[in-house]
Image (tube, rainbow, N blue to C red; front, side):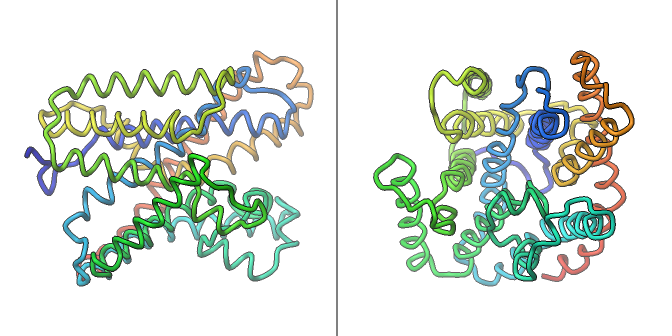
Length: 357
């Protein structure tokens, strides 16, 4: 078996992170353009960019199992795993959420925030699942995806902290129920929010990522480029289908499975030989979490400002679309700045603690 060394970085995965973040930015440009300008952004051709979330979920599943597969069943590794995951997700998220709440409190940025009770605010800070309309109107709209991320970490923590003979049947039963719900064996009550969260199809994308990590770790993949090309082709088909709405198909199939193929192919390729990757693209991947957290805030504020100072700007759709690309780029740069000057220093604060666990 050919495997990456302990210190080898899989740079192509970082590039995928960056691309996923850019896709989400483009998709949210259209969403915010519709909200603030009542106009489409480039005729909605970038709406499939929301699939960057599917890509993120697959990547997360892959990375966690690939890095921590030897920790499964080893309870002594549980504390280290939990600390690493908490410090990766929460500190920068708390900073951004606090800034958003402060803006809403002092500048009436989101008036609905004042309607939220202390329990809803507490849930937002710990990323306890809440309805998306609450998160979008009062907190961080993208945080619904982080709730799934935290749930996946909890599931994996069970694999580390419990004996396999105990946790494997529990997790297998959960996966079986999730898959059965996904294929329509049974329906869940629409008003049962938590049950729909626990058995949501997005959880299967983490499993696809774990499956990719298992395949890469246990088998040598001889046709990496074939998998990469197939994954890119299927992802493109999914994007075309999403735009034209030709077939009603789940994002797990349209984008989750192609993402898995791309991850398996690119990882196998990079483990077999050196792949020269542009450092700027790697940096965008490293900054993808800060970009993901900040981009909506930036795009929303700039578009509102433009509408206030130049209300006639919506009349020229060409100029509006070009401005949208510029705004998206500014959001990207702003996220990079947050990564360099806030997220990285925060991570460095916790490094001594991580080294002792």
